[in-house]
Amino acid sequence: NLIEFLSINGEDLGQDDKDVIYYIYNDKLLKAVHNISKKNAKISLKMNKIGQGSVFPETEIYFGESEFSKIKFVLDNITNPEKVMGGIQKRRNFVYKGCELAIKWSKEWGYHFEIEKVVNDKDLIDDIERELEQITSELNIKIMTEDELTEFTQKAEENAKKKL
Image (tube, rainbow, N blue to C red; front, side):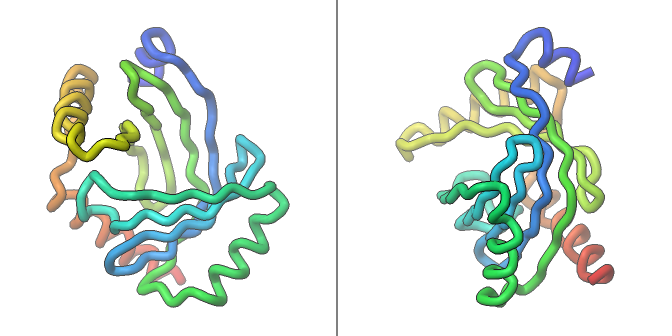
């Protein structure tokens, strides 16, 4: 229903499937990403761990698609994360009311939803968070609390750890 609604009322940006390797630290998240649909690759560093706040700096560096195996090799051999998770993430992206929305599915996370808006002025963060809450309410989507997200993330990481 959500995909149908956003296809009609938003801007459909299309498929954005990825193969992602997550290097998980206690205070940050490093990712090697093969953007299957966009035919490129990237390294992404989020300066927080999932479940530790929704506002954080993120830096991305893009590469040609053929560089993904090299990126993964380098990160596998120079980093010392607490945990590593990986796998295919199916996703479809939309823009709705000035926000980016992604409907996602992965083996570890199941179906889930992401809404974001890039903010360069810290003074606007509270207003933007209210805006995101208003949009998710309109779409009848419950935002997980930080505690719920932390618990969910810990379970997903533990399940992934058992499979390594």
